Image 1 (cartoon, rainbow over the protein chains, first blue to last red):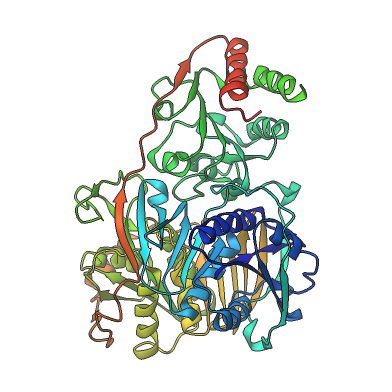
Image 2 (cartoon, rainbow over the protein chains, first blue to last red):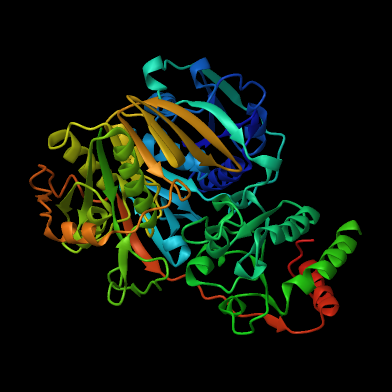
Length: 325
Length: 260
């Protein structure tokens, strides 16, 4: 069996979990394996159907009121009890903030190694093989697994969602036994960022600004641009973050986030190597910079040499026209 | 307060990574090695907790002799002691292997602690595995990717970063914490600190001292290939009046990239 952990935030399934389930189902079919999904928490009724429609043949719901909020120890305990019982051969999670926190803890409990943040997965001679970026993407490494179950987390926004089907299957609800002493690291409160902005790791379009933005107030121009485009978020270079023009959550690059959106637009970013590493796997890259020698032009699909402050206003108008059509 | 910090020696983030394809390793020649940036936040936070609550900061690294330089940097920042666990094995990018070494070290040699601090990931392996694995093996609460930490007696409160939001966690000590950028602003070493660090003995512990056999530590992830990503080719670059440039850019987004 191939088991996929499905993350739920505020009553909704994370898109990255459905991407992982979609990929899991493809792999399981190739390996003639059953695909199952597992939810952990409480009050999760009604979510199983979505897992069925993305390919799960079976859904496990691990319920305990102590797990209504995330706790790495508690969720590990719950998932461990299930894996001990059903013995999956492969265990996958999305490499979200929660997945990156939970998967290694569970792997240690299972005494298996873990491949984090994989960007390719394939079956080779009946065995799973993964590719994961090292050095924020400056290198790519392929791994095979020697320990079992095979455990990997998959990077969000990389694997395509499967076509939704009318699938159904068996739902197995289990009351899991997790004591108070196992939830000592339980989340007490989720603090929302202002404006409920989309995170760059989940955005399909990233509009990024660098030193050339000249000051924090000018990032509003980028926010307006991202407001016009669907599923867009504002990113930044390290220079802009270190100057405190924008929060570190928005930083792209080796001490920020590695991203692979459909479109990456870089405004006033020259393209330091640590920045390029974090965004070079984007599908399309656009750069606007007044320096014709900026390294970013060497990797951009479309470059505009010019003053970003003069280009952004007509760009907004043109974009609005096309989007409205 | 007895605080342990675990640090790693890594190539700085401006490094170009060249690969020895025969051995699947990074070519170390010409690389400038530094204390991994997130580990630097962890060291700084340890010093701040010590300054507020009293106690001692001990810094550990697992690696070759060269990692002493990294430990000296932490000592120069103000750490009290530093210990090198000597490990000459090539980088395996297997978090479990390192977590096993750290857990054994703590259980056998350093069982008295209140706080275990890490960087949220090492720059390079980019795994984000070791802190959570150590927490599990030692049955401790964990909070990773922390941007704010308050320690009050035997109780801690941390803010951890998630997508577009943050989680607040209160937990009892001892606990495992991993640092995210934004947690603090690491201090520079003082001249006095550098002089003291120079004189400080760094004890060595071998993997044999910890009773760990090669077999136990054999990586369970088999590295089969390592390469640089395919190079991107430069596309079209235009230099025109802003209105015209904007029009052409939107046309590209619409017709070629097809994102709008």
